[in-house]
Image: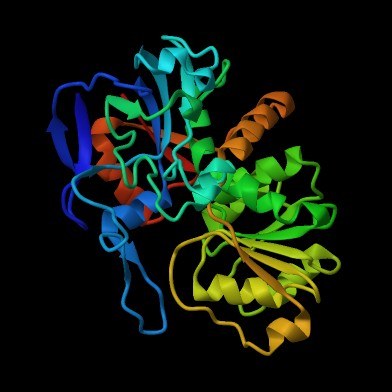
Length: 356
């Protein structure tokens, strides 16, 4: 089995050849067909997050991410072997060899109150695949339990892979402002998540979104994807442009970037009683004037990926609404380093997906 591992933070990935694992217990072995390259992979590769305000960066090593680690949490694979205990597990459903499935990666301890309530993505002892356990930058991947495999039922593996992260992340964020989607909302960031959010917003019956991004190519991609308007976040009159394009009060903003500038603009564009959903992990410190939070009665809510139920809902929505996929650039697994660097330097529009 070939895999590409982080063996040292901020260093090129290391190609490793080792025996292909065989599933034990409830495990399922898949042959990887597609693995998305996500901004979260950049943070894992770099080893931490910028917390701003002069704070020490948040070290992923201190959070339990050990090396070497095979990244890749947006994975689609074909089932090639099923562990002996999985065959009789009711959670396995009708899973069989040959099924092509999306892997739900946001695993928890499986034992705490949150995990037992199907909120594993909120578990304090995360076991996320591609983060704390090996993921999809490989020929083969072991999935701990069949319940984390969602049959694609004919969806294209390459365009479906991003639903495991960018898809469920934006879907979960949109659900947090679902009550105001009949008004235009503002989305910060027109990368893979932003374009995904536009597709899902339309499928959920939303009025639409004004998209803010400093990259002209990405703003153009957002317009092509159906945005109501696109604004350069670096423009001196960005706030005025957002207000003009919204044509009325803005009740919700979703920040898919997560730096001081987007967080400030997201806060400022909201009307009284509005909600700012923070998703992006770019880094930096919170910029808001504290008195304005109660004066404007603003809700600021973090949103971290999504749970298994939301991922299943998302794939059902994709099938029933025939949602158009976001733009993807396919690259061979052997060019995983090149894909990460292209993402880091902002050269990608949409998503890079590694294939065998």
